[in-house]
Length: 301
Image (cartoon, rainbow, N blue to C red):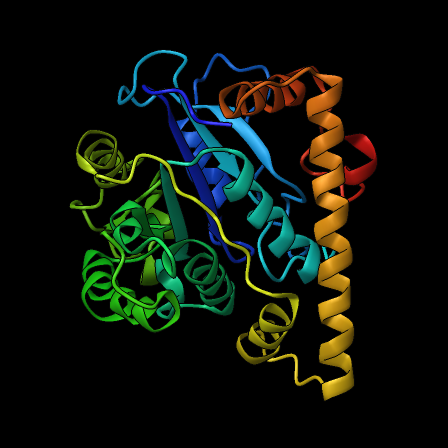
């Protein structure tokens, strides 16, 4: 299924609590009945793939969609389900760009970002070298720290993602979503921080849409054993050899399950191409057929 020209499909991924859903919400068409769910929840809010119409004036009206994903570290979504969901989104939805989110206040490239980056590296970048230009490493929650911390993240922390991604992303950007003076570190006022500042991200997406040679990202899945070993290493699971094999088997089962879920959805909605798939999933969320905050998403689809 080929993607229609003139569309912008963007995947948002990263660890739990890194602001993926909040960032996508800021980019969404505000007339939507349902927006990405976000908030303070130690267990994670997004449990499955969600798709929402954006309004960022890049590809034109009704042509911009963002895909929200669960983050590695979610207490209700097993890591095998998280990674297979992200894989399926990349494989099925004809993406133009991938945004890996990392919260600036953490001062490091956290485990969830490392897992997401390694997954994208193995499935997309390994066999599509030009696709690095379609990847954005995005610092979130810049409104919670002083400007010098934002700059330090961009120059010192963000480049560290190279070791997980296998190369430098095409863009490193920072975002801020609404500053309240009392939120800043040590209650220090910083007039230079702008609330709801997503300009760098939107500019990067516009550049990808207009100028990148890779118009649609392809996906080649890593083997279950390779993926299980990666999760054990990066995720700090400290599994024994037998347990790693069991994790590989679980990934194999979840891959089959999520593919069947998507195939059943496409059959039920008579989906013919990737554009229809993205739009039908978005419609299903707005109608309530899909609830991306439900951990039982496989039964919903």
